[in-house]
Image (cartoon, rainbow, N blue to C red; front, side, top):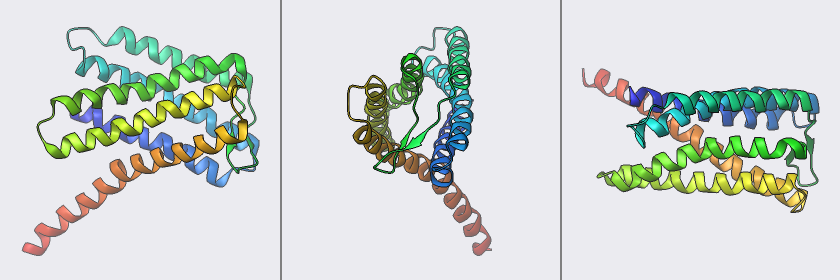
Length: 210
């Protein structure tokens, strides 16, 4: 059960990053298209974050019911998504060829909180996994994911500071896009490409042995 939930969670995370990557690659000069990508991504983020909350309770706090926090997280995520529809921000390209999502200041705190919940769930689960794992490979994988998720937390903090006009817009956007791209590439390669290649090899080896 937990293996299926974790696999679903990782695939959803990879898919969510892929949506942003594809949106930035093909629709960077079309603000309305980027807005649509942002809205789709936020609804997906709401469900992923709720699943992450469920897993945190299931793994870290097994004696407590995960459902109240999971339902509240889902409601909060959907609310943020609907607020983004109401605000209708129009993303734009900065001088450094990054995407400024133009989230209004009144919405920035809620958006930041949802992103922190999403990334924080991954961070907490794999931090515990790092300390309890006996396999060296599992420890290394967990350590890499912990470092990446910590980078993600720093990244969304930069995004939040930008929305509060605390740091330079072009600098923040450039750093944010680079870190987001790195995290996205890792999740896509680690949880989509590598499993597909491994499955292909495992199928080919038995057939050749015959």
